[in-house]
Image (cartoon, helix red, strand yellow):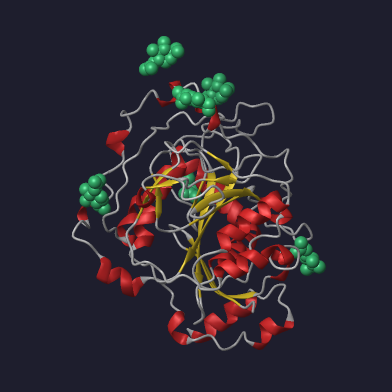
Amino acid sequence: MLLLVLASTLLYFSSAPTDFLKSCCTPSVETISEQPHTKEQNSDRGSDKNALSPSSDTLGDQTARLKNVNNNSNHTIYTQITSINGMDNQRSINSSESPKSEGDLDKISNNKLSNMTGEKANLSSVSGEPLHCPTMPPNLEGPVAVNTSSADLAAEQRRHPELLPGGRWRPAQCRARQKVAVIVPYRSRASQLPIFLRHMHPFLQKQQLDYGIFVVEQAGKREFNRATLLNIGALESMKLYPYDCFIFHDIDLLPEDDRNLYACREQPLHLSVAYDTFNYKLPYETFFGGANAISVGHFRQLNGFSNKFWGWGGEDDDMANRIKHHGLSISRNPADIARYTMIKHKKEKRSPLRSKMVREGPSRFTSDGLNSLQYRVLDMQLLRLYTWIHAEPLNK
Ligand SMILES: *[C@@H]1O[C@H](CO)[C@@H](O)[C@H](O)[C@H]1NC(C)=O
Ligand SMILES: *[C@@H]1O[C@H](CO)[C@@H](O)[C@H](O)[C@H]1NC(C)=O
Ligand SMILES: *[C@@H]1O[C@H](CO)[C@@H](O)[C@H](O)[C@H]1NC(C)=O
Ligand SMILES: *[C@@H]1O[C@H](CO)[C@@H](O)[C@H](O)[C@H]1NC(C)=O
Ligand SMILES: *[C@@H]1O[C@H](CO)[C@@H](O)[C@H](O)[C@H]1NC(C)=O
Ligand SMILES: *[C@@H]1O[C@H](CO)[C@@H](O)[C@H](O)[C@H]1NC(C)=O
């Protein structure tokens, strides 16, 4: 087992500078496990296990509830997914690196796609390719039920036979307008993970996205470094599939309205405008925390997130400053759409250094980010509900 892990560790040193290699071979044994979240998952198993069996479709009964959401004259603000191919979204973050667009993953997907719903993709376009999905997904409901009661990972797996390995999916009848990597930084939130996944897969599928969920779990004993985990998720996801758009998403936030589209726009998009825990009000004008969507091209232009924010807080403000510094602006959906429920948890201790780090941030925008990112991947697995990336940030 240990040998296997060491071997796979080495596999992921594709472009590793020498100091990665120095520390590569001392993974701490307790952080390595094949089934990442088993321990806590068991103790979190709720009494509602049976309710999640494949036969009980907790979302199915809502479909008729909000038929007329698209009648709102302002719907174009938030219910169109346009292709962002015209934007600066080269296929890879690092254009010298070619993603495996025709790789094994994609072959798996193609095979499985035609079997997914029992229907053949619509091949009536001239090129023989399925036509683009409509800019406005047809089956949106508006407000959706948010369920924060405990969930069971195994039961959720059984509920999602349609997923491709690694928590990926794309519509069978039409070609999704954007390829979206949902990147979730993770450490010790085993009870929240299945709740998040239970909510997000149906939500994203209704939006007709070609998406994958990437859970990036921090290894090592250092303080949590959310921003570096997001950088790692961005780079690693691009090695698997040519994504157009990154959604950076906290695991404890559940979107309440499916018109809040998880796709990139001409400007970086702040998705989580209004939280229940903040009385559904934006806490301050430049707030960019929680969940946001940044195109691959913009993310590269911004040099990703800073790697220097250890501990809780500040990295999202630094990103807001990066956006402004690069002449971009934060866009948002209306607060009555961009609503979120936060799953309750103990408050994290804030980093005392965060304000100073944010103030000094601008001097580091060009030197601190994707181009200075150092990490090692201990393990990566294509699980049914998500791609698990176990990685240790190595920046100072
Ligand atoms: C939440 O999900 C559980 C199963 O995971 C189910 O038993 C319960 O009825 C759901 N609650 C709501 C409010 O939908
Ligand atoms: C939808 O919009 C049309 C035209 O504005 C209007 O006639 C109709 O009553 C609206 N439907 C609903 C359910 O609001
Ligand atoms: C549409 O948007 C305008 C400007 O943002 C706003 O004043 C108006 O109230 C909105 N209408 C609806 C129906 O949301
Ligand atoms: C898809 O279905 C066909 C028959 O309907 C079957 O032969 C094939 O093995 C299936 N492929 C996959 C990947 O399940
Ligand atoms: C395929 O797409 C064409 C063009 O949009 C449409 O006319 C046709 O009805 C579609 N066929 C199926 C089976 O969905
Ligand atoms: C891309 O990769 C090359 C070679 O590994 C490296 O020299 C270059 O700095 C990288 N560019 C970016 C933007 O990371």
